[in-house]
Picture 1: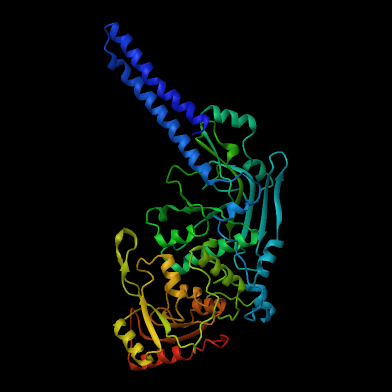
Picture 2 (picture 1 turned 90 degrees about the horizontal axis):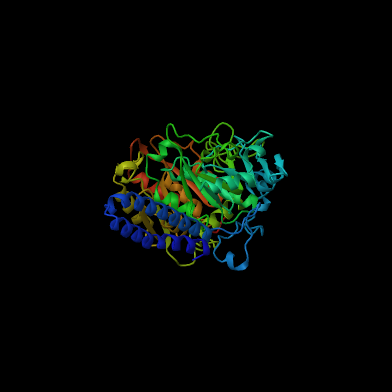
Length: 514
């Protein structure tokens, strides 16, 4: 217990005898002590509880925070044992990625991060406050993803809108002066410092694993580009998202990015908006001032950055043309991030490629689109494009493949944890499934594994989402189309097609242009 805590505890403890003495004095004078003392006692108890709770809050936060810095935190060897590893990339060219076209290297290799890093420009700086704002723009990408890095700023709320363009932004966002901080402290308001680099996230499509992956990849790229480890993630919900439950696997993935729990911040409801407020305009009665040595904000022109990423972007003069056009670029950048995510989930590294002739049974993961629980309000959800009598189809495919293959059927949407989903994909050599968000987990498969995508219903073969993930992940890709709309139908010809696609995958060959 520190000196400040001990002092407050002692003061609160000595109030009881004082109250007892006052009660005796009042009783001696023939008054009714409890009528007089009850309001006083209530006030004292509330005050003591407030200060003790506040000290406990600060004490708990102090255990999580490292010394303040105007740059990403630096850790000693002991601290590194509890900090997530930095994102690294394979530059050995062991899979021939460096021999790709110059366009592929520029679009999907770590060179991309160098280009983004070199775009740095200073928006403003203030030597008086030691506050500065830097901007990094990926101008070759659609929507021009932009990183703003804020050094030594103050906010009322982690949800506050941040000034990005004004030359006076550094003055607006600067921390309170020493004199003002003294006044704030005197009024018993809270000044809290978050010493880790803060990265603010605005989630998009939180009930769709594929859409969630945009934000995961973007944040990981920013961490790699700025050499950030163990950030304080701030998960910012809008009013609509606030009304729904956050999927547990969504939070599980974000929790794997850092040893610090994400801070979930709700958008202020009607009448309570804090947007546009900054520390310089905080009234004296404000409850909290947050001092932030290092804040990262990611924004895009015309839409939320959480709705786009390397998976779907278009590049000016490059080979990435969005989710409707094939590309055949293998990405050390993508694989490095995937390996980092897997390592953070404590699932280990799986860089070894699968082999056809090692005598082991080939493991096939069948991604099912059957009904599952639960979307918001505990409702069962039945996806479109589900396969009629899917279990019978899987048995027929297994029978045709024989004993050299083993099919495991999973429903990624049915309350599987992130670790379970990643583990299931990582330990399979081939994934088969109807076009849908479950196929995003194919990105975690071993290089030279295989993905067989089934089109049908409202998704035809013009949707190249998962083909392009297979290209980035350096895995084989095959596809076919089934009849039907909401429920897809099949016959023996369908079984033969699926079997042929599976058997055509040779793990010993480089994935081609399929």
